[in-house]
Amino acid sequence: SWGNVPAGPPDPILGVTEKFKADTSPKKINLGVGAYRDENGKPYVLPSVQKAEKLLYEAKGDKEYLPITGLAPFTKLAAELAYGKESIPLKEGRLAITQSISGTGALRIGTAFLARFYPGAKAIYLPSPTWGNHIPIAKDSGLEVKQYKYFDKDTVGLDFEGMKQDIESAPEGSIILLHACAHNPTGIDPTEAQWKELSDLFKKKKHFPFFDMAYQGFASGDILKDAFAVRYFVEQGHQLLLCQSFAKNLGLYGERVGAISFVCESPEEKSRVDSQLKIIIRPMYSNPPIHGARLVSAILGSPELYEEWLVEVKGMAERIISMRTKLYNKLVELNTPGEWGHIKSQIGMFSFTGLKPEQVDKLAEKAHIYLTRDGRISMAGLNSGNVEYFAESVSKAVKG
Ligand code: PLP
Ligand code: TYF
Image (tube, rainbow, N blue to C red; front, top):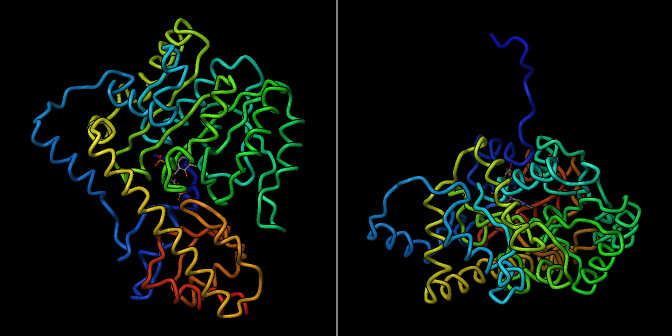
């Protein structure tokens, strides 16, 4: 029997959904998990994805196993989306890439690879705070977790000086995770000038950049802008690692489609890395699921569907940005104590409101509004129908 098994805590983000589901009020709002909702608060299947589904259905493809590293057209298109078609490592055939079980799986493979082969200390530096799942993923792969300063709660902005100091004082050749865009949970990113400084600092310290890009296109509505940091680091010659997810930007959450890639020194190095990626993946899940990868390939590989998708992803980003403006305006109109400019300046799925844990509890209890206790809200959960009610409830909670 399992008498020795202790009960574990629920996931702090997914646990919020459980509480939301148990609430019977018609006013209830779920701002916990980061999943896009449309103007009616409903999950959104992108029209480009629906068209791709139809194409796949009509093509009557088989359901054979994929190779260990996934669908080749998919990984090629994923790499081009992130790095650009003209990217030198791509052209020179020195990018090792494999399909993964969405972004989480990419992170799991990447950290496992580093735990096995990184020639230095087996530690990874994560921003403080970071996406909660980064910590157990790195630990389960056998890396030690360390943190670098990121968020300044006084300015509700980036603590860039603190970040640089911590990166500077990490031992030479450290593995450092960077959110490529739309930092989760804060919604605060370095500026392009700050990314350039970071690239120089990484070079000077010979640090290894580990990029997590879960929101390309979804953050600003512009896939090039969101890929700036990754592409700049590659241009500067960093041999980085990149995790990609198609959960948010194509709305393919449950299809679990992502990729992990390593910029290598030569095609020969790439083939050695490829061989070890296969050895890591094989005992984990053998080979990845086929359907999501086919959908992504159908969209990114068709000039018409690709154009359609660009408009749709921009539409999602813009709806979120418009909610930021509405929320900010209403909070100010209600004379809510505090400075709320960060609601508008933060980017991506989330806003880090600065609400205290007790205020979060009060919102759940009194207003049927659910968010994580760190004060993060998923902006996508707001719409014209509930943003005013949310602002009024926040205003009351803050006034006490
Ligand atoms: N990395 C970050 C920063 C995230 O916010 C997420 C969640 O969306 C992921 C990775 C991975 O998500 P998924 O496994 O659904 O692609
Ligand atoms: O941060 C979020 O809400 C998203 C979705 O275990 C998510 O990244 C949250 C928790 C989790 C998996 C995905």
